[in-house]
Structures are given as C-alpha cells and as structure tokens.
Length: 343
Image 1 (spheres, one colour):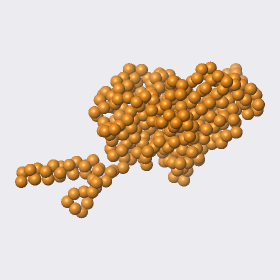
Image 2: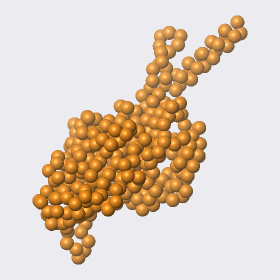
Image 3: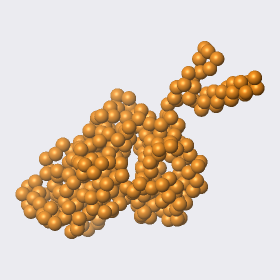
Image 4: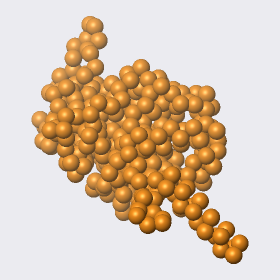
C-alpha cells in the first residue's frame, strides 16, 4: 500500500511539474493531456540571453540541452563547453535578432567580449520542446568590427505593417536573389534592391559612403573596381564583383515575416587564377580580386520592405578555401542552391 501511494504521489508531483512547465494542458479528467507550449518571440530571444549567460559562467549545465545537441563554431563541430565557452567574457551593446517563431529557430548578431577583447558573434539556436537541440556560432574576432556595429546600432526591431508582410517562402526567395546576383554578376540579374538599400559588413558601411572632400565619385561605367560609394544596385549592375566565383552552402536558418527579416549562413569563394580576369557588362576587360584561393564564411542578415531588400548586415571570417559548414553534406556544401534550414 505504501509503495502504491508513493507511486501515485510521485505521478501527481510530476504532473504538476509538467503543467507548470507548459507541457500539460488541463482536462476534465484526473490528469492532463500532454501538449507542448509554443516558444514565442520572447521565449526564443530569452534562450539567446540564457545561452550567453551560461557561456559567461562557463557552465553548459545552466541550460536545457537536448540529448543529441550538435554544436559548431566557425564550421567545426565541438564538444559542448569547448571553444568560445572557455573564453567568453561578456555581452556587448550591439544586439539584433531574427526570430522564427513558426519554426522554433532564433538567430542573433551581436557584439561580445572574448578574453576581454571586443568581437562579433553570429549565433543560431534551434529550440524543440523547451530544449536547445542545435547551436551554430560564427565568431568574428575583430575589435574594429564589434566597435563599428556598436556605433552604428541598427537592430531592425520594428514590425512591418500587416499589409506589407511577405511569406517565409517569399522572404527566402528574395534574399537568395542577392547571392545569385552577386555570383553571376553579369549586370543583368534580378536585383530586388530598394532605392535606399544599404549594406554593412564587418561594422563598416560598404554602400552609399560619401565621397571624401576633394575626390571625385568613381564612375561605374569606367571604374575597374567597385566602390563603397555606390548604391547596392550600382555595385551589382557594374559587374565588378565577378571575382566572387561561387556562393555556396546557402542555408537560410531563420525567417521573421513580422519584421521582414532573413538570416543566412553561406560561403563566398574566390577561385583566383584565371577567374580574376573577366569582362564587365559593357565589354571592358578587368582583373580584380584576391590573388590566392580565398573563402569567406559569412553570416548575413536581410531586412526586406515592400518586397525589396532595404538593409543588409554581415560578418565574415576567412577560412580554409572550400571549407564546409559542418551542417551539410559535401555535395550540399558545394552547391549554390538555396536551402531552408529552419527545420
């Protein structure tokens, strides 16, 4: 009798605990019916802060990780608690979220300190049933980039009017046109840029930069190198980004229709050699780009308004040429196809 009573008591306490955690819904019977509670925007963004706080304490035990959680840092699979977990020393002041409530993913671009030195972090978490089941980090160890983002301060937190919101599929499709347009770079692509489109890379504006006093703004029709003084569209229509020979492993990990945001990871390859010499759309022969094979691992976020790309933010870190993300097969990693990785 004591064992039976004790078993019922433990079951009752378990039920109360699950009810408090949101995993049980009240029913007309003695117990409740199991059902997961959705992790909303606040919940998902809270997981990011909990993750950063746990790293600051150097203690993964402070977080609910799934039993098969996978963690990568700069494309390398690591044991939980290794890498940045050992060296993280603080949060910075720059914070931007792309929160995918429907898919249970959240992406974060923010400044941090590592060993008390400013750096940038692109973090992607997948949350399932109250547990973190996947972690992808790109750490850009650049004090200049971190300070630049903190000074610029854009965080894209304003929601779009309901009438202007696009579907997840439309957001992905439009953002991917940026990668496709840059890779082909024949000056004739579908470039869905707003007139005031702006891009920030590594904490620096790389479009629409004012012409310095005493200098002449470069002419896209005659220049042999693209200019940060040009608009997004002018850069693409110039054809002078042709030395980016391949943009591959395009993984779109979070889409936020409410705010018109997309977050992606990709690799930009510069094959060098004979690919450095190419013809511009008006027929001029130009030689440009890195002289050695070069790959950037990139985290890139897009803000879309009225169905067009208005703002772009990215961090990039040089990695071994042809490197894989750790989340793709070799064939996927070499492909230029867009992939919805928010699952």
